[in-house]
View 1 (cartoon, rainbow, N blue to C red):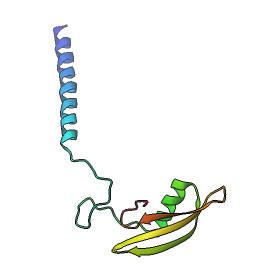
View 2: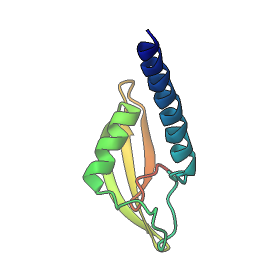
View 3: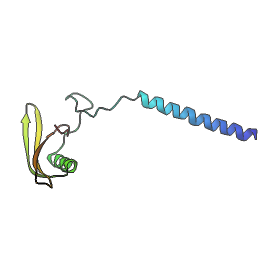
View 4: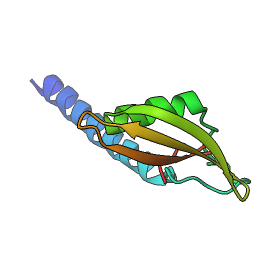
Length: 103
């Protein structure tokens, strides 16, 4: 009986302390930025192709892209996508080509 109790106590201690170590390791990890960073930042997002931007916007807005063009805005490349939704409304969405962010 004492042997079983010892194993149960040891197992519970292992679970408790193992969980505490996992929480500490998670707290020590730096947060991941989801915002597009500067050109020298290690967290900079990869460039997004026009095709990927079209798929992303069609899915997010549940509308069909009817026109797509690329524009330069200073040193940034912007995709301007015109969409047509089910109700017949036409609207434009701008996507940053460097980060994929809708602006």
